[in-house]
Image (cartoon, rainbow, N blue to C red; front, side):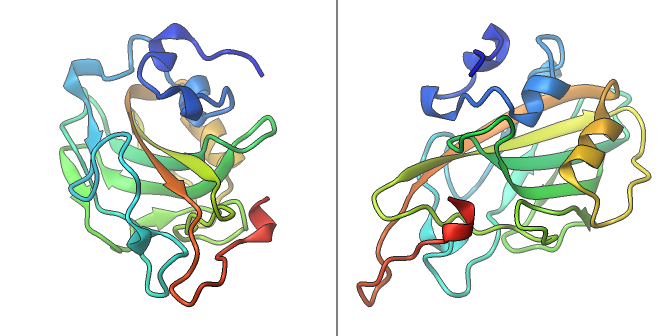
Amino acid sequence: MTDLPDWLASGLPAAARHPGLAIATLGDKRSFGRGGFALSSPAFNAGEELDPCFTAKEEDAVAPPLEWTAPPPGSQELVLIVEDATTAGDSPQCHWLVWGLKGQRGKLLEGEVPPRAGKNHLGNSEWLLPDPPVGETRNYVFQLFATDLPLTLMPGASRDDLMATLKGTVTGCAVLTAPFTGVKADDGTAWEDEELD
C-alpha cells in the first residue's frame, strides 16, 4: 500500500492510514481543516473506542451523533463518508455515505436519518454497523467534506458516483477516527459479520 500524504498522515493514527480513504483522493493540504473546519462527536473523542450502542454488539444500535464547525466561506453542501481504514484492498469498506447537509455549522443527532444517503459496502443506504471479529480492532474514519456546489445525486448513489461528483469541488475537509474491537455478545456468542471479512 502507498503511504498517505504527510498532511493527512499526521492527522490520523497509524492504524487508520488506508491510502484509499476518500479524503486522500478528494482532499489536499489546503483544504484539510481549512479555517478551523472540524468534525467531532459528543459521544466519543477522536481516537476513542466507539460505544457498542453504535455497533452490531447491541440490537437497537444506531449511528453515532456528529457535530461540525462552520465550513469555509462559499461552501454549499456538506458530505459525510465513513470508512473502515483497517480493511485490505484498494478501497476501504464504506460504512456510511451522507449528503444534503447544509453548508454551515451543524450536527446529526444520534440515530438521525440524514437528508440523503448512498449505498454502503453491503449495498444498503444506512449506517453499516461495525462488526469486527472477536478480538480484532477496526478503525473507522469519519470524513466530512464541504463542497462549493450543491450535489444533484439521487439517494442510493454509490461511493464511486459520490466521489466522482465531489472531485474538484471540495472547499474544506475534516476527519474524526474511532476504533472498535470485536467483542462477545452478552450471551457469550461472538458477534461476527463474515460478509465484511
